[in-house]
Length: 327
Image (cartoon, helix red, strand yellow):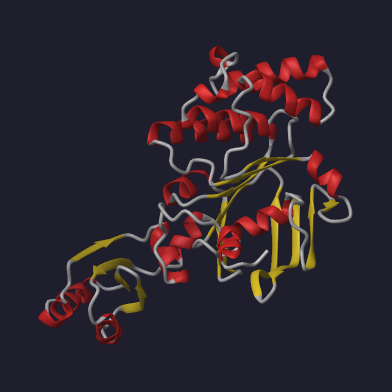
């Protein structure tokens, strides 16, 4: 499969802060590609550069064969974008928002009418098309933003936290629409999300970015296989370093990761679990809970970043840079 996005040594700096650091990556045509990482890792900055909203400090990137700096107009013609922050005109109706978008992309009236009908039907908003957006629920607005991003039939659709704050039913509806689009139009979809189950369910491949760098890349299945054996999660806030040192010496333990809520341990032998229980039962460690399970993407994320993915953290890396006084 040919690549529709090519990124080579891409870097973005805000003064002394490096938001994206020499990142190299290829994303294939028709691929559902996930970008995961802690807040402040560089995901939103990367997408902003690929969408031509930010100019790279160095390196290069092409989208659908067009360079993001020297051919920015061509890039914009071939992409659709749904950002974290809402950008609909609340005083316009759903259909008027779509019509305005279509005119911005040079579509004629016949194209606008047909495409508006198609995308409204796709996201199940046809019966609400004449209502002002200010009367819409959060889930309806999100679906309309996705519809708007599809108006000009983009080659690549960027989704930056598209379902954050939405209820489970609405999130499931949105993924149903997007997976249908991917199959029907061979559209490349690039997603950032804090919901690991979404990434596992939808993405063909996932890249984890941390501290502005790419740390691991692979299919959800391959990433989970990189965590050898089963995982034991130990929730504790006291003596984590001392406990980790003791657990590292247990036979069959392949790694020990310390993160905010406690310790994650990978074990390849069932007998190891009994020894782990004996160690954590010592009163000085004040263990709150212990559980064991097969590796998940959460475990992969902890292993490669040392953090647990937080769904309620409100700041993107760009906003964090702004809060630090960096423009």
